[in-house]
Each structure stands twice: as C-alpha cells, then as structure tokens.
Length: 122
Image 1 (spheres, helix red, strand yellow):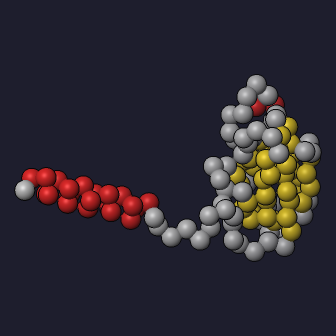
Image 2: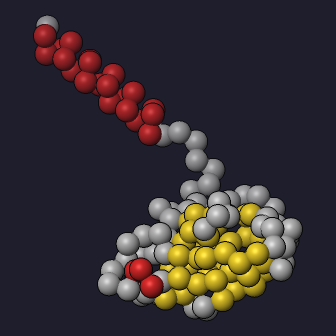
Image 3: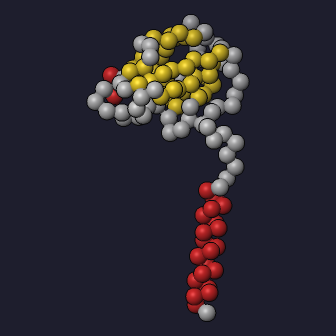
C-alpha cells in the first residue's frame, strides 16, 4: 500500500514539475517580436565586434541583433536598456541622440574587458 502511495505522489510531483516547465513559448529562438523599421546586426567573435563604431538614426525603432561568429558572447548597450544574452538574439529599442557603449556581457576570456564598441545615435 505504501509503495502505491509513494508512486502516486512521485507521479504527481513529476507532472507538476513538467507543467511548470512546459509553459507556452512562442518565441523559442529568443527573438523580440516588436516591429522595427531598421536592423543593426552586431557580429561578435573572440574578444571583438565586427566594427568599433556603429551608427543608427535617433528616435527610430531599431532591431538590434547579435550574431556570434566565434565563442560565447552577449551584448549590453549601456544606458539604453538593450541586453542580449542567454539565448536572446534580438531586441527592438528606440534611442535618443547620443553616444552609447556596447560591451560584451558574458565573460568570454582574456580579452573580455576590452570587448567594446561605440553606438552613435544621431
């Protein structure tokens, strides 16, 4: 009798765990589904971005997309609320005019601290 109760409780716990983990995920690729009028793709490889400076127009919805070419990297555009890492590949944001720092936000090795670029919004 105790074995049956233990088996039933184990089955209930397993079903509860699976139900909690199996929530709806329409965005499995980590994409932001907001509408953007332009896209900026940032390519990252070991300890560098493909450019040292990027330029986008102000007050325009831009889709920021990260493409990892080599290694594991993420990006954060400081003071802009844009963070891409842990499977999130793009985000749409509208920024005011100014200069922002793009940095890698995943510790990626010996060159991590120097992995930075500029984003100029004009």
